[in-house]
Length: 181
Ligand code: IMP
Ligand code: MG
Image (cartoon, rainbow, N blue to C red; front, side):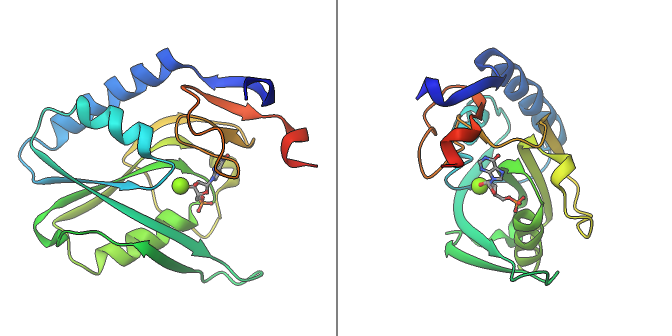
């Protein structure tokens, strides 16, 4: 598995300091709120698990599985929810926890969908951000960002390629030859 990694982009210790920093901001920003953390499966599983251990304000957690579909050059996409939330979010300050903000389409459609359910507030947090890849039509902003990464395919710490590499403890760039064959 390690042989398939070109370079480590976010080391274990850097991940720890990102989690520390973001959890402190959340503890400050949500102290008088009713926080619900929504983990987008499966990629956010490691980030979510580490984050909640550092959160000291009362919070509930829930999970979603969703995929976005864009046909051709059409700018309007659709989101399909494979696993929906268990809770009614109308009483909650919802914070979506994502692994990576890439084109931004998935998160954008998810925010639209969840805002129809009238949460008290709705914000997004992503471990990684690939700003170079953003769809120019998307104006959604993250409230919390772990780290900006270049336009390369990354795996590890929850992120996969064909379901592999999620169990690496760091985020690394996958060698091109692994997916170009
Ligand atoms: P977006 O809708 O283009 O922002 O991307 C949504 C999803 O694509 C992310 O939540 C990831 O699951 C996946 N993704 C995007 N870039 C990468 C990557 O570099 N490695 C692994 N998964 C990625
Ligand atoms: Mg994902």
